[in-house]
Length: 137
Image (tube, rainbow, N blue to C red):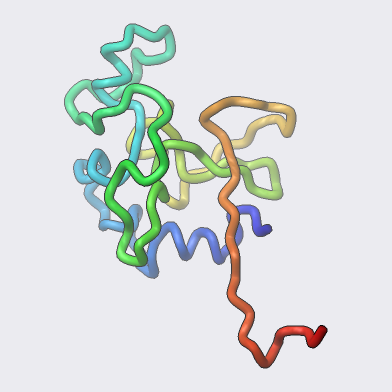
């Protein structure tokens, strides 16, 4: 398991150098990820006051995996929905409680290692090992 390493960041950006895998325009985020949008704001949640009042992704809280368009590499949920823990206790990628800007691949926020929230999770990266490098059994 790799915790938001260079491999995971590369996967999130799908090989691009832009803020999001789909480019630099945050107005496109509702099609690609779940973030603090008007749907969340309209819940009246005490923490929803900062949510975007115009953009709508259609889900107020945690979304089902694969609910949004994949990036160019076919990977879903790379921006928003659940932020990802890193080895350094930093959280990256933003979640359903974050603004669109915080859902960029480069976004980082530090939390206590004991912080347990339903908007923080892990991204498991499985790296294929070429047959020539596999151990013989």
